[in-house]
Length: 148
Image 1: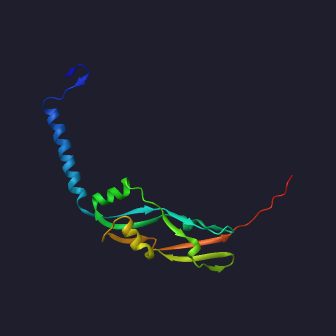
Image 2: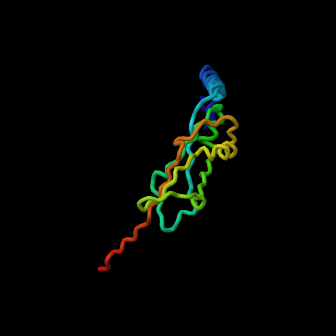
Image 3: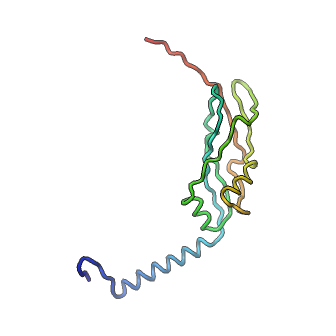
């Protein structure tokens, strides 16, 4: 029935819609209270890259943190909390050098306590993917172009 621009629900349709909303809400609460294994991505931010070097692309890939937690926690981390990037200061790393490249194998296990504390993952942290970050810097090359 339509009355002055408002739609009124009456009868079996209204009862069905109300029951559907209640049952969907209860189902969602029950499902999200379970324990699940999931991963969420963290971007990496590098500080103090030497001016004569360029960071090679694989080192810029995001890191996935695998956790086992309640569905509500996973939903919050993936969709409602914008995780801050993980900051890596390259000035504190001693690189190995070979053929114009500087490289360092960086085990991400060093960040386990920091990540657990930062995202409040008490006992929920499982692992990183990848478990080791390979940071490679190459020498910048200047190209002198002739002026026409």
